[in-house]
Amino acid sequence: MRYKTLLFDLDGTLTDSAEGILNCFEHAIKTLGLEKPDDMKRFVGPPLHDSFGELCGHDAQKTAQAVKLYRERYSTVGLFENSVYDGVREMLETLKSAGLRMAVATSKPEVFAVRILDKFGLSQYFEVTGGGDLEGRRDRKDKVIAYVLEELHITDKSEVLMIGDRRQDVIGAKAHGLPCMYALWGYGSREEALEAGADYIADRPQKAAEYILSY
Figure (cartoon, rainbow, N blue to C red):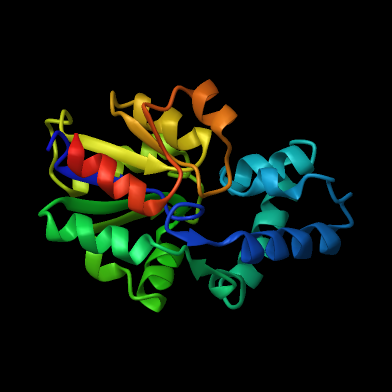
């Protein structure tokens, strides 16, 4: 096998978290009296500070308020408005049984990522769960990947593969010279995968496992 270590995104790759994320966005938007965008789903994936910065006209104080309101609801209700994608457990079991090292690399704050993986019984598959911080210093995917690689004590990145469902995953991986498999069952699209320069595209978790083990 070409790849021995796999880094997985969380939202849109392991779990379908759109309901909770969008409900929390709406809560913040409504509370602050902001205009609700027509295409809300574009906010599933990018860092919160970027998305709310755009909605708040890059007003730093209002952006901070929006993030606070979002997280107040997310930390108690929103994170569990979520479900594991069909086939993900089987994919992870297949890959773990093959002896691959696996970790989570998500821009979501790590404290929430750990709770979600524990809730759905997925923590057992991952050696490291790496996420962002609540202060927004480690919210971009390239920073998260750097953190996870450090936690895994990996210096030779030639056998590492990133798996994610949005352009941020591809861009973050490429910043470290890593290939990226685009999870088409998530929130992105084939067009976005091609435009971002994804190295591989898988339309189902089962196919992702098959591809990884066949390389």
